[in-house]
Image 1: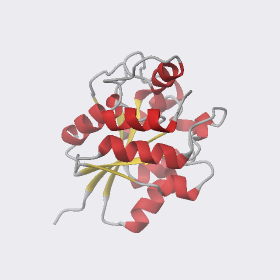
Image 2 (image 1 turned 30 degrees about the vertical axis):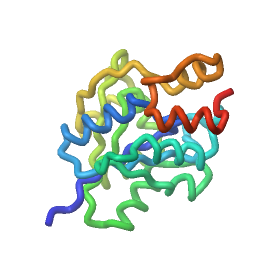
Image 3 (image 1 turned 90 degrees about the vertical axis):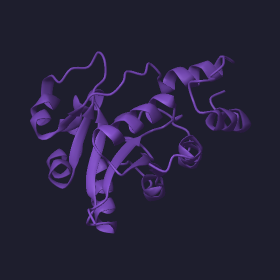
Image 4 (image 1 turned 120 degrees about the vertical axis):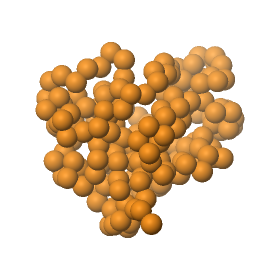
Amino acid sequence: MHPERLGLFGGTFDPPHMGHLIVAAHVCEELGLDRILFMPAMTPPHKQDRVVSPGAVRLAMVERAIAGDDRFTVSDMEVRRGGVSYTIDTVRTVLAEAPRTALTVLIGMDNLVDFGTWRDPAGILALARVAVMTRPGYVATGAGAVFLPQMTLCEVPHIGIAAREIRDRVAGGRSIRYLVPPQVEAYIHEQGLYR
């Protein structure tokens, strides 16, 4: 039996949207992964200046977003741990709990730009494969480009949906239908989020 090929998909997921699900499904097939583990961050290191919805709320939305797709699971590891969520800490914990896992950390091309400023980027690369998902308008330049030869580039469909746009639409009383799964849309309205 081969080790589980697990994709680690971290992010704020405030809210999780159809773009997240489409690229996760694409990457799962493209890279031959057995499962994608969605990992909502408690406090993302590069977004400490922004107020995000409580971790429990974002977890609940991800659970609703991925319901019914057995390739996708969600973990409360970073939310439970609290504080700033560093990828290296999560990678070490995931591998400590399941040492035979073949782990792939999924990042967007926009994250590659900052990868050199992450906590222990060399440690992440030593413990896991890092797959960079393409993103229109972003190219591998600057400090992040030095890491690209050690990473796997994964072409993904361009889905022009941004969580910020969804929050703004809700705040403005506009529809978010088809931007998020129906269960997430219902939860946002039930909880009065983003108003």
